[in-house]
Length: 310
Image (spheres, rainbow, N blue to C red):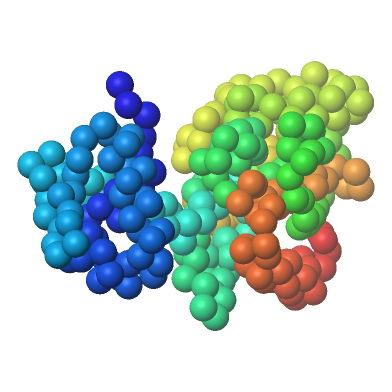
């Protein structure tokens, strides 16, 4: 089995077959005529047959040359298609974000455009552990991660802090604790709780367990859910108090029931840092303008929308 032949040599053969003239083919290939002659000789030596019959007056394809050129055309076509496929992918950035994050910010990230740069952003709602894994394996290009410091495998990535999420609860308006805008964490003792499953965000799950232990109780977790819709359904059916970060009823992904209240907690340290992490494609200079645009957008939101949490 032969290893691959240099596409440059195949292109020389195809252009020479089209022109049947070394001088014309050299002009089209932007090379000197002696260099083209040498390339054809190298190709014929490699395949072990004569591809072009030539004398002082003309050039003609041999039978072997015709067969070779037919296949070479296909090889060049597939190579061009491969480059086009990568170019299309290179113009799209995949962005992962947690479902509870500020929807306005997510939409504005998707609207970033740069002069002369046709990059488009495709957003994917997910959870921190999955977002980290997909950034590292190249499936996502960048994403918003909660508690980024708990993921040492991402330490070599570019990271910019975004805002600090408060821990919040979601409970029916008829619940005895619903009349107060601020709760103490210890008041959740013996209350059935609805939380996102540990595999969705193990760092956050373990942090919440540790914070409850510091407050003097083990949380009574009634349901561990896998997605925002299940989370909302459990609360809608009064199966427990929902606990999460940055929860709000205006988020179209979470879709919390309207007859609920969302108190925060009085403990000042019950907050979680969120950051944006950038993958391999952002290590080169090509996407630096896009990275800078995201930083500017972050700064704008810190001033206008997140001054309490940034």
